[in-house]
Length: 219
Image (cartoon, rainbow, N blue to C red; front, side, top):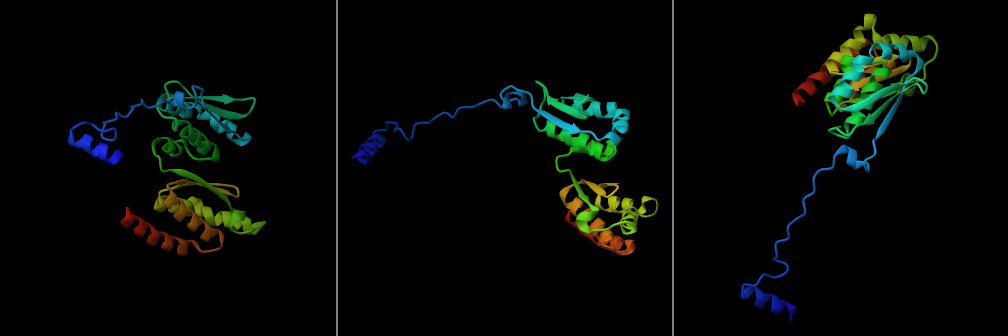
């Protein structure tokens, strides 16, 4: 019966309930300060003792891009030994807070300011960390030789891996930190793992050349 009524109404030219144009509500985009119920969001980055002096020396180089460009408040809490970050009312994007935390963390891990600041400007950059013992359990002189193989004479091997994979590498005692895109980090990590496992540098170089050529073709 309802079908017949709808058909007769359509034939008579009367608007049916299904055919009525419903205007969709339009909502303005939320500002970062409104996303968290108007409350500011925080990030805290702990600072180890041995990075206090470099942080103090480079503080203005860290402060300027964080405060002026990404509109994030930053301060050093000397009592708690950490860098504290907070969103402001005029912060343009809520993701800036995490980018700034990653930037400060990268500097504390040992990366140069010029390299770490790329985390603020590019979206697809990450920091990956692992230890030598995660790859192979080495002790004493064997561990020292493995660290020497990773660096090479005057850092030659490390620079070669960095330049061919477009990454940045920090070797801090037995910890290794890699800054770069996801694919490039994987290539650099594979090369470093081969060196830890005992592969000669020449073999790693030749493999790197082949992988770099393949990456250049793909991108």
